Length: 214
Image (cartoon, rainbow, N blue to C red; front, top):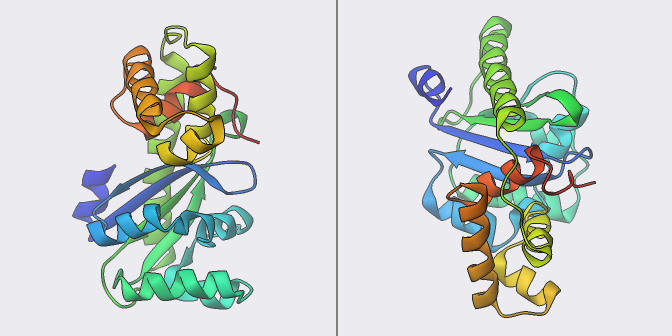
């Protein structure tokens, strides 16, 4: 999927597995500037990012340059759009992809130029490729054997990971040290046979270890 997108002039790709209201619980990104990714995580811009929620409500894809006209201009949304502009991400395309049992995702495609205007047929091709890739993710989740049993604490931590919480925040919520959370995460990775928190969240939900966030 990434090979196809990059060969068609797309510099940045983001994939947000989302809750039913459009809020993300697991995110994968490729090609975005490191400074932007750090800011998005550390400043919790994900909490005020209006694009996934807007994509969940829209029946058709939309361009990033149209976002300001499509959402209510709240202070938080202005803050996010200003940060996005300062990061010089350029223009992009946003849309939803759909899977069984409400396993939906938001896809963002950044072109790294100031403004793009694609023909409807070109947009449709990009949607179809993203939709096919998303369905493959859903199928892999269904085919994967049940993960090794997690402890009650590991399950609790993974549920917070699936809701987008950092290890530091999880430590505060659960009432343990961040070092202990790190140790639990290493055990979770080993049992689920994954190497990162995004894969752990998706694998945990797909294999029924944790419930899909509501």
